[in-house]
Length: 357
Ligand code: AMP
Ligand code: AMP
Image (cartoon, rainbow, N blue to C red; front, side, top):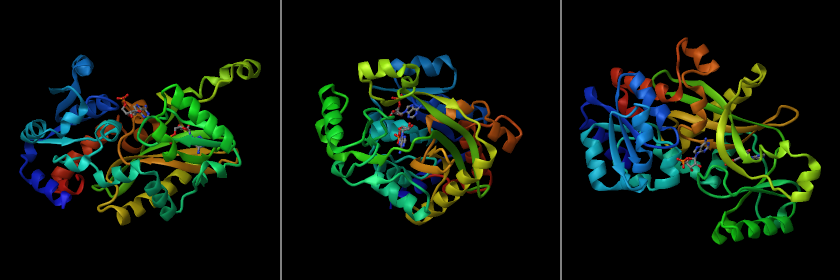
């Protein structure tokens, strides 16, 4: 079994000389800075173009340059990282640019099997259904559309190519328009996920499940800053009508949020149920960072529309601390640092094989 193989690789590591490594993109600054704050040496696998970023910020003790991120799967790169005793911290680029995580014979912090659940929308829905959390309704096919829907496409593509449609006709019109302009590929259309559009405020909760402390911790809350969905409100209705602008959801950045306090229990309730079910679907269940993506409607009902079973870039808003992580830890704490702290504590408590897969 892959997990046994990874644990045996970890057993060959010098635990007093562990390094923390990741791919140079997405939330690497957060992860590498956090590792350094906890006293680890760091390794950044990056492309030539981005090398200067990680050098400039001084977060990478060692840089391994690659032409593309897929090279992380090459034998020589993996051999080198194993020699350096690297534990890898996965982020959005691992799914977006690599995929085949089963070929990565290096210890990963977290649970790589849950990352495979994350990219499969059918599996994700099953997970939420088992957990009993409220979700937006899903439409089986475009001809079932009878109200405002959001249409999504596979892969961690940060909202790119999503559109709204209120009828089957509108679905195909927009899909064709997006294919013509090169935003979507023809074969994407059959894989579209059609969801009821929930009118409300989007809120992204970044939690951390700590096997060492046996608890769920809220590390930060953010919302996405999306183009051009967040630009449309700045254009008066008349100009919008004349220029036929469609909202799209390409993520550009993130904005921190502090939630109305009485709503926090809804998020904790969902997080607990999601973590409980994770143990049934993918042993040993959730480990480390995960993000629950939600919309709160006008009655403040919370709908969960996505989960990420790893660090999300939205946690970058919580460096060096978010209000929540400060209240919990009484010191600066952010997701990259929290990950490194867990690795450190797991080594001390002889639990390291319980936090990697
Ligand atoms: P990048 O390195 O910017 O190409 O991002 C790597 C992957 O993570 C892509 O699939 C992006 O869509 C996704 N991503 C990057 N930043 C964010 C963010 N702030 N929120 C959500 N997804 C993101
Ligand atoms: P996702 O890739 O699923 O994280 O969605 C990207 C963006 O689409 C979110 O940040 C929201 O702005 C929007 N969105 C996704 N699902 C829904 C939904 N069911 N109702 C309303 N907005 C949504």
